[in-house]
Length: 394
Image (cartoon, rainbow, N blue to C red):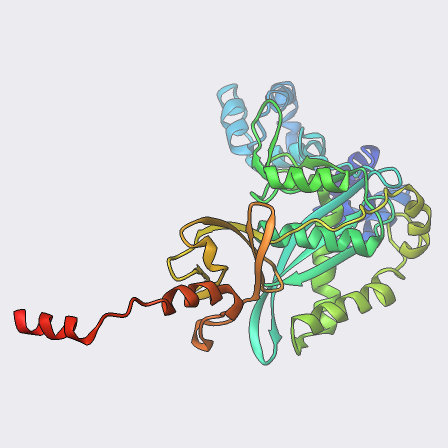
């Protein structure tokens, strides 16, 4: 049963435009309870009487402290006790409770974005079974703010390269690009988020944003509620997809089932806030999305290596051949998320391999070392007498 102060909180939050679902979460009750309370003309809560109205002479002091940002009931109690208050803390807390809804920074008002305006991005993680083994799965959720259509991609890492890959896959799945992308403050996107001044974004994330033509935006630190729609989708994926599917044959099988589920269930759901089927609402948003660029952004790891004297480079505990003419020179290495290895000298691709474990041996392309072998075969021949004379001197 709701208490009188709970009803006051509900009424205040509703006046601030907070959705009934969010009010229910804050109070720990069912949304139907909130709905009934708002429709009711009279309260069903148990009335509590303040014996002797002891608090009345001190309400002005309490309100002053609240306005100054002092919300700790114990601190306020000490202040009014110094003024002569002889009652307990319970009455004080009952007085403060309804006012907490008006506390600065505590009221969450869900804002709606225009079609094509914003995509929200976030990571979640869960442990599931893949190929018979328990594995920690990182999944990236990207959600369009207007239609609530979203896409998620599962992988084994949440580093910068996988962040860029997950975002690109979502843009490709959704078939277009929102004007802005709202991200959390992870290093893959945000280098520094000062209390004042402009946010410093990761240079490569800015390069990605320029390639796809969106404006990067970052949540305020410790204000993840700024992208609450997407965070709710992280929980939605956990509570729906990963409850229905708990084991997978491979990573490819996991992501295949994810896209199937998105099309058959997530896109077809009736959204509780906007009261529309997501797929239908997306049809209104799709024309407002910007087109994808003609070629895909390269999400590979960027590294450099110095070619050894025998024309190999070391990559992830194994050795891979490059043309022998590059021995001693520095080359650029691109390691794809699909385990492809590309080696560049300047802007020229000079070698490409597929990564493999060291126990399978070095990876060699014979043509890379053909010149090196020819030079080795040109050995100066000496008469046998030279070696006989050397042996005599010894």
